[in-house]
Length: 389
Image: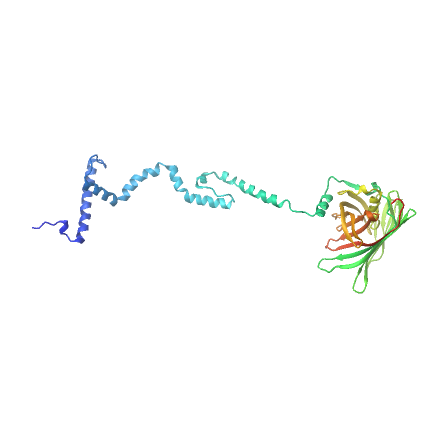
């Protein structure tokens, strides 16, 4: 009988025979190790045994790998947390993004939430330079002076009646009038201020008109008369005429210490040094004539001014010196402003007094609440000569 060997087997059965032979050897070795009670032998294994062990490890990887690596997962618990912290780190970063805090590394994932909340300090430091950059934006000098003067606690309000006043000399000014209303073309006109002071009495007239296409439109006309005293101008009567309205009159009764109005039944107590809407221009000019040092930037001056129906306490603020352009050339002036006062008057009145022209108000501007601005600027001035002035 012929013996069957591996070499005599066909090639297709040869590989299967090797596998079965290896499995038989592995099975016998497994029984031998199980009976001996040890998985490791002290004797060096023969070459076939070594081969069979390699086959066993390849054939049963799951059991051995889990048996060997399971203790490694249990013992190094901190390491296990670090390895599994990757998805946790992603969640922490997501929360930090919502809280505007900078992202942290995986090692910072165990930081208590309270510490994470206090982290935005770096963001605040980044915001500081932005504020420093935007702070020194340039501000116009006139706006700065106006804001500083209007709300300057270091300059208390001074009563005009308590200051030195010398009535201006007689004269007449011709003015150019420009009225600019929102969403409309400018309208031009003429104005005039006439001041006559003689023998302790005065007469004053202020009027303005606008030039239309074929005619002239009178805006208003003020007439005032009264006395001159040691405290300057002392009005007795002022009349006012406006387009479409009848004439109104305001009376100053110094014996009864009262103001009365023809267009109103209201009587108002007369304050010392009170003025009307026309004479207030010349009374303020008298401050500079008596003592130019009385014009100080930021100074606030209060005076009662009677109008056609009532009297209000006007507060004028000395803004400072300004050079303006006129038909007479550039003129150095003192800019005085009456800002609006809530509940009393809403318009803004501005005056520019010229020391070179006996402190006459060479420019007058009124800004209404609707944005309309009417400006009167000197175009011609005639002054009477005075001794010592």
